Length: 302
Image 1 (cartoon, rainbow, N blue to C red):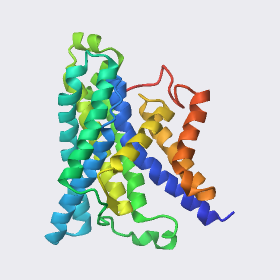
Image 2 (image 1 turned 120 degrees about the vertical axis):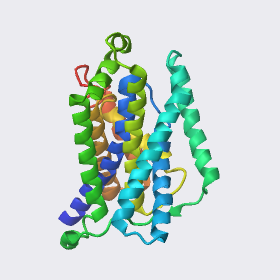
Image 3 (image 1 turned 180 degrees about the horizontal axis):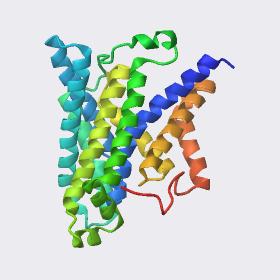
Image 4 (image 1 turned 90 degrees about the horizontal axis):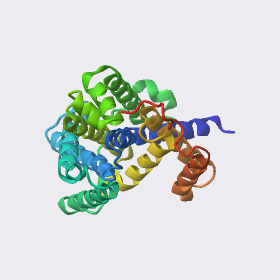
């Protein structure tokens, strides 16, 4: 066995899994709070990437350095995508909270299609080049054939986001309100929790993590188009279900398992059936664990 090739597959899977995790956290947080599968969440990821591209383009023309562009473009993408997430919840989901779940699901699919076509009309149907905003780290020179600087940034960002979310959920007033709302909205309201504010905050936080994933993977791959959010969103949803939807640790674990599965199957068997392998693995896991890997009743939800 070629050990370098094995590590390339391992780290490639870790990169995919980290990006899936940033998106899947939004899926699982929203589901944990209001039991809604937000199919438009992948489009928020796409909007974050496009916002980053526009801001990065303007700053590049003004002569800013790559690191400054990465930081400011990421902040702009997070703010803009969060505003979209907040608005989407107010327009498409809040009026349907008392309606059957199927109505909210159809609204989510409609919002997904609307955002895709909005970006298609506002931008283009072609793939657009995305600048590499992450400089090459000199200390990675001996292993640059195995791992790139952009992958290191993706790993670190995902780990930091996961830690910050865990701290927020477990120790902050908003996190406690989120847990109370996820368990029983009416009781939470009776004890003074502003449920509307909690739900809106959940959408904002989930949109922010998705936007981060969008700009990081766009910088890593080097191109984007209006359709990138659909496939990435479906994969992240699969990862959330695989790990146990409603569970934050489950979303991260499911994302990593899915990323490694895709990477090793495509690396050692065939890249033509990448999606087939991913979904077959999901079916195999759910046959034996219908609630997902960590989908137990006692699992903490957000």
